[in-house]
Amino acid sequence: MSPPMGKGSVEPATTPAQLEEREVPPLPWRVPLDPAPWWAWALFVLPFVVVPALNSWLWMGARDMLAVGLLTIIGASVVRVAGGVVLYRVELFPSGLKARTSMLIRSLAWQDVGKIEVGDDNVVLTRGPDEHEINGIPTDRTAEVAAVMEALREQSLEVKVQRHRPRPGIGTLLVLLYVVLSIGAFLLRWHIVI
Image (tube, rainbow, N blue to C red; front, side):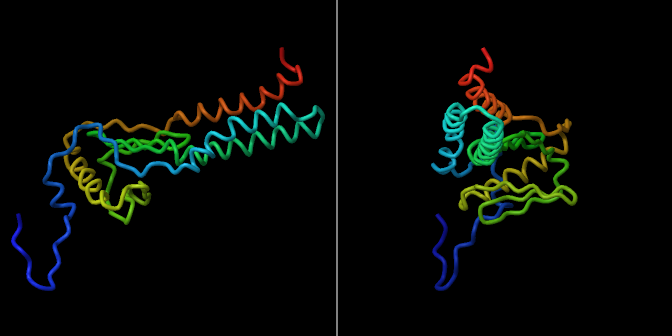
């Protein structure tokens, strides 16, 4: 228990340097993020149901083919954007971090990070001229997340690093599944296939 502070003084906030002295959590550590809102889940699931239904309902003709194409493209865009909110996850490893967005899994080695900055609900990792922002962290946990990242960055000087290029994630498979469902519904309904 700390001694009571004098009148008008403020309890000092925990700084990343103080948190850094704590142990690093077991790795891989998933960065705590705010849960996706209900509307993002609805937007993510809705195109899988609505667009194939609309595409199977359309009459067959040249302008209907255009409508099928436009509905499919619009729905794929909605799935990709809403998937960016729903599927977003960041995990910390001894050699770096992996961020899963809607379409890609991106990796960043700790040895490439030059600076770590703390925002209100985000942490910004600077790598040369590039900034990588991790959003959606609860405001009371940003300092903790930044401290863990800083500790891992300092420990990584001894770790051999393998750099990875962005690769397709589960969002890519879901968008492809959506395209197959939406166009396949049209083709099956009008007996173009089978």
